[in-house]
Each structure stands twice: as structure tokens, then as C-alpha cells.
Length: 197
Image 1 (tube, rainbow, N blue to C red):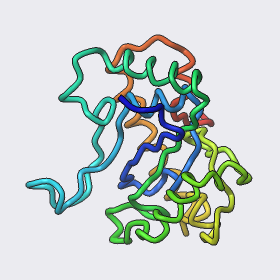
Image 2 (cartoon, rainbow, N blue to C red):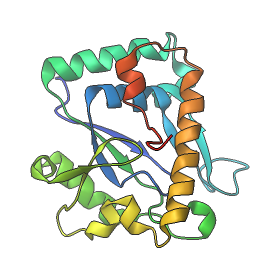
Image 3 (tube, one colour):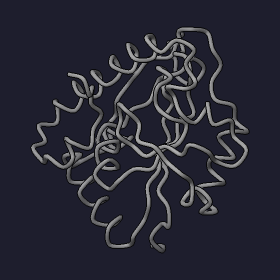
């Protein structure tokens, strides 16, 4: 009904505080995160939820899917490649601490700056580094955002705690993804990993 998008933005609310505020996804990483549909149920947005809880919903809309999530992800990759469309994962949740710590979520002004930098194309020229667990490309600087906020490992005051919680979340991603019985190695390899194991 309309033109193809010029940019794809997936929103997540990471209750663990280890997913970067913004990261660029390869088509296969976009497929992996689309199939996973990770976010957190947050108090005030869902009945009966009193604290943030990790949840996965395929294609961010599991109850409405009529086909296997892989079919939708394959279509996503096809369209991304055909129209040269970048995809970004934006975390509106926690960074530098988990939700259980009592820390605050990423501020709305920072999220707005990130979204604007994506939409106006400024993010495409940013220097990036690879996230050690999720393998995504993370800007090391963007607009006037504190660079320590952009890199999760820098935002955490305790590196051992960061590593422990990151590995826990990676395990949740991997366990969830196994339930889809997907054999495409490109997609599996685009998912998060614990590098020393």
C-alpha cells in the first residue's frame, strides 16, 4: 500500500541492562532478533506485573502469526537486501544495571536523540565496535550522548556483575531460540554467544 521503509527500528526494553541503547543489525541479526522478539514486561503497562520480567514473542507479535516465524524473518531479509534497508535495535530499558537494582531506565531524551540520529542518517557515519555477547555493531560515539552509556560494559560499575548478567541473558536467548527448530546456520550464528565457552 505504501513505499518500502528506508530504515527498520526494532524496539526492546531490556530489563537486564546489557543490550546496547542502539545497535546496527546485519540482515541475519535482524532475522534473529525479529524471531526472538525479546523485551520485558514492565509494571504499569501490563496487569499483574509488579517488576520487569524478560519475555519473548516471535516477530514481536506471536499471538497474531499464522505461519512459522522463520517465514516472516526470511521475507524481512529478502526485503532488506532487495531495498538496501538498514535495521537497528533500540533499547529503551536499562543500561549499566539491571531493573532489579533499582536503577532508572534510559532517559527519553537520550532515546529521542538515538531515534533522530537513525532517521536523519547521522548514525551511519558513527564509529562502531562489536558487542562481545550479541555481536552487533555499537556506536562508540553518537551526537552528544555520553559514550559510556552507549557501550554496556563501560556503563556497568562492576565488570564481573555485567558479565554474569550478560551470560544469563544470552542463555535465555539461546534457550528460547531452540524452540523454533531453525537449522539455518547463518541465523543461528547471528545470535548472542558466550565467547569463552
